[in-house]
Length: 76
Image (cartoon, rainbow, N blue to C red; front, side, top):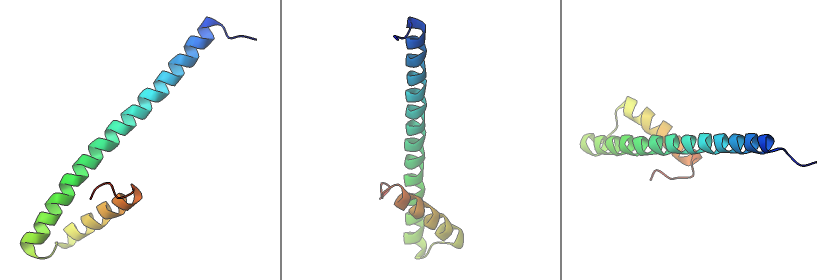
């Protein structure tokens, strides 16, 4: 049994919506990675200036490095 034109258009609309949602997620993830790269850079600068990170900075660095490992090391 072949699909009607309306059913095929509905399928295409669903696929397009899924692709758009996936593309949106990818854009948001890339923005987050860019932002985290800036944060890591600032933390590393703080570490160089002070010789040690503040407790808050160490905590943030640990969290970001954990995320980096989860993402396959893309932030370094």
